[in-house]
Image (cartoon, rainbow, N blue to C red; front, side, top):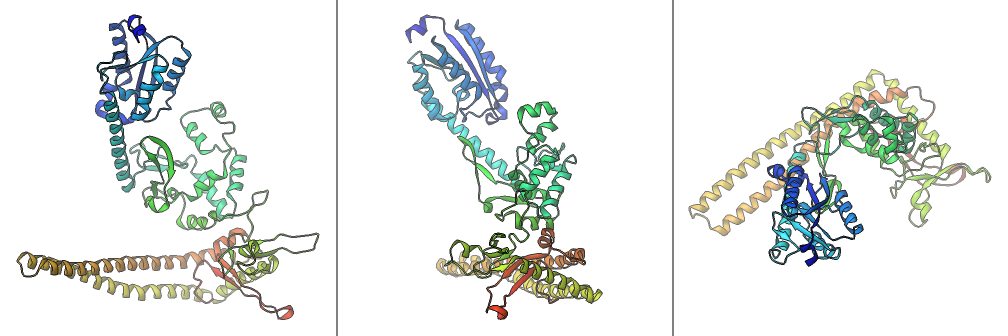
Length: 541
C-alpha cells in the first residue's frame, strides 16, 4: 500500500440510492449529494477521478447492480492500482458478509483501496478500520429492519383491500386519485371478456392464446409499454413477437379473482430481505378482500370456468377440448374417464374407460362405455329435462320457486331462532365470567376453582362461536340455492330445441356424469349412467 500513499490516487466514485433508504435520509443520501462529496474529497486529497458510477433505485442487499458490476469489471481490466470511494459503507452494500468479502478479499487482490468517507474507513491505513465489521453489521440490520417495516405496511394495506402490486392486471389500471385502487381500462377490458367468453364455450387456453395472436392483440407486458407511449417499432425491438400470447398468460387471467372485483395479495413473497427471488405462498395464506373495485366478469361465469381450467386435459392440434373432458367420472375411484379414440384399422369405435383402470387394472374396474352411447344418453337426459319443464309450463317455474323459497323460509326460521338462543347464551357466559372474577377478587372462591370454571365457560363459548359460523355458512348456501333456481331457468331455456351436444352446453348444464360398471352380457347387459345437473339436481323433473 506504500505505492498508493506516495502516488496520486486514482479514484472511482460510486453512488447508490434506493427505496430502502427512508424519506428522512433522501436529501443527504441523494445521488447528487454523494457525488459532490466525492468530488470535493478528491480535490482536497489530490486524487484523480477515473470514473463515476451510479446505481439509482437498487437495494443495498442486491449486489447484482449494473454499475457496481461494471465498476468491478473496469477495475479488473485496469492494471493500475486505484481506489473506490463511497459516502459510507451502506452505499456499497447492506449485506455484511458480502461487503466484508469485497473489502477484505477481492479488493486487496486487485490492489484497490476502499474509502468510506462518513465511516472514517480508508484501507490504505491500519488505524481507524477496526470498527468496519461492526458498522457493516449495523448496515445489514438496518436493511433487515427496513424490510420488516415495509412488509408490515404492505400487509396492512393488503388487509384493507388496497392494491399493492407493482403493475395493474391486464384490463385494469391504477386510479389517478389513489394508486391503491383499480379502475377498468376500457381500452382492453373487452379482450378480458372475450377470453372468458371463449373459455366458457369450452375453448382451451392454448386455443385462446392462438386466437389472440391471430387477432394481433398485444400481450399484457407489451401492452403496458404501449400505454407508456412506446411505438410498435420499439415494442418489436424489445419483444420479437409482441402479440404472441402464451397459454400460461391466458390461464393466469382465467384464474385471477381480480376480474370479479376482489383484491388478492400475498400470493408470493421473497425468501428473505437479502434475496429478491419470489416464492409462491400456499392458497390458504393468500389475502383476499372481496368487492374492492368494479368487476369485469360475473361470479357464475368465473366459478364455472374454474372447474374446468384446473383439469389437466388433452387438446387436438387445433386446440379443441374433448366434449366430455373433465365431466365424466368413475363413481368408484373418482377418476375421470378417458377416451381411447377410434381405431379404423381394427374397426373399433371410440370408448371411454376409467383412467385408474387404464394405468393399472388392479386399481379399479373398466367402467367402459361407447362414446356414441354416452353421447345419446346425455342428449336424451337433457331433452327429457327440457321437455318435462315445457310440459309443466308456468307450473314448473312456480314449483321451482316454491320449493326453493319454502326450503329457504323454513330453514331460515329455524336458524333465526337458534342464532337468537346462541347469542343470548354468549352474553350470559360473559356475565357469569365477570361475576366469577368479582367473587375471586373478594376471596369467595379460590383461584383454582376460578380457573376451572372460567375454562369451562370459555370452552362453551368457543363451541358456540363455531356453531354460529356454521349457521352463517348455511344461510349463505340457502341464499345461493335460491339464486341458482333463477339461473337454472334462464340457462336451460336456451337449449329448448337442442339436437346436438356442445362443450358449452355441457359446461353450463352438467356438474358431472357418473358411469357405472355394466351388469350382465349380451341382450341382458345393462349399464347405469347418472347425469348430475348443475342446478337443482335434487328436484325430481
